[in-house]
Image (cartoon, rainbow, N blue to C red):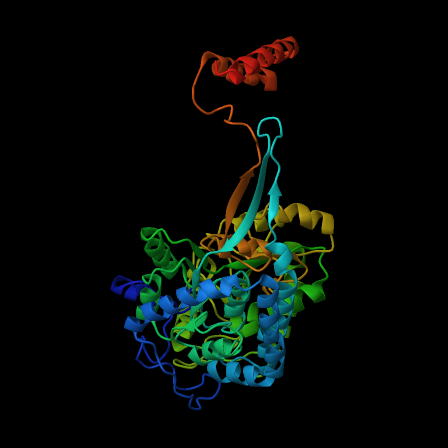
Length: 538
């Protein structure tokens, strides 16, 4: 997520924080100004208490103490407690949507559909499946080589998880980690974006009274608070934000040998093939580009359309874009800084020959950036190279699918790609050649709301995984337990090392495939004699 605010470890990271899109009121500190006015109309927002960086270590210390108690609670009981979050979430649906409208500028419908309803499914999925997903699993051991031995793998919590999240989906993104992390027995210390502190506080309030004190802590503030959190001795850092900030977080974690999960954004493309359902493709691409005012790491920021249908497809996209209603279908951008980044990318593209077919930049300082469609022929422009994170849809005409695949894979980002075609067999063959972590056919961008489906990328999109059982690979650590029921006084490989043991070792190598058929027969005979000598201590 190239341009979203994120916390940074240390003073040296302040410049990257600025580049990552600080709020319009200026870079915040723990006690500094959170945004005070709504991007959706300018009305005042309520006050928020910041967290002093010096207080973060104590929050982590309390979380560590509480985590021990929490992890001892049986998984089924933890699931029963957290399952109550679903009812609270749904009961507060209108409140949540209204807050997201005020604090982020989201249309009410979009807030409910993207950040309330999917999270009810999220709670159901994890609370109903966590026992099975964390169940111990046996390890098959060769009875001849390892007699009397039984092995099992269990997944234990990491401990204290530091969660640092952005402002574009300030309810949905945190819950995708908080819910499974808590169910796995972790404590979580959560730092919301300083752009959306009120939404962060609301997320935490959904768990009020359900958890032991300290299991879910909240640290409100800017980069200094994020730095303090990483430096406080946590066991895992889960970060969603910009590439520049993510690299700094990765370095800080590496220096402390703390594992980290990074989800850093995308430059997602839609590949529109000439056999597509043109009407569906046009509708889907317009939604995929402009939902949440394009402030989505899965937004369509590149369209590659085959030449044979390009004119008709572009005309339909332009027409549909023109029908979108400002403030109803598409809200304002959330921060002035991000709006300025989008404006600069558009201006640079136009200077290099791009043609604006719909929309265009608003007056300076306005957050009401209209949905904009641009026909473009050159890729050497920030509009096609960097994450835009705003309501601009660049369209490039290509000769064929081969060119579209090559151009898509040439990006340093690889989060999601959509293919639009009636040829499903061909689509699957093309999908296997894409680098993207998520590929959809005849749809785009919504699978982050599917709790059973992994959300992940590669390259500058990061390597973090949210949702699906695969997410537990980061939130837990595997531990192997071996029980030896053998009554032998010693193992074959224990001291003393003798000629008989040497004979056993090399005969076993031949018997297990290091020799031909007759050589293996000979080795087995040799093994029997050598085993007998070994048992006698020779």
